[in-house]
Length: 211
Image (tube, rainbow, N blue to C red):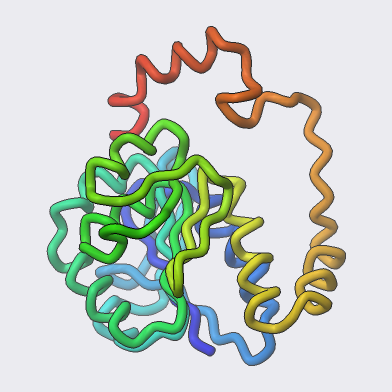
């Protein structure tokens, strides 16, 4: 199974690394990082780069596609090279997936129209505006399309996919070996739980945070 994780300038690192840490443990997985051009691709902080070993053109038929989000997603919304690649690989993929605002790219490519999908909580209205049935759920399956909410939810999505592809016991083994047992020091990981003033502060800044 070939798994392609898309990289582009100013993507969010954990959006790509979370699914990587789970999906790479699938039996017979061949995982590749791809971008328009091979070489280092900087994340949204600028402090970290990941290496794309192959170009989009070199990976025409992956079985599973992962599209991360991040502030750089906005400038990719009109990148026809990337959007055409998403449409082309989706035609033969078994699974087409995204994390965070990566779902906006799938939607912009026309792949999520009329489907249920999720994204970062600050981007849910944007997603709905692209003809998607937007939901705040953490991981959403709609046929072969799997979308995850913000950043850390990519780990959950990866585990859920491992379970679908290789069975529950294999997924449980991956969870155990990665010691994924979240016990956060705060219970503020969603707008339903966080202090109201923080939620409103970031809603007011969403236009700047997402670009």
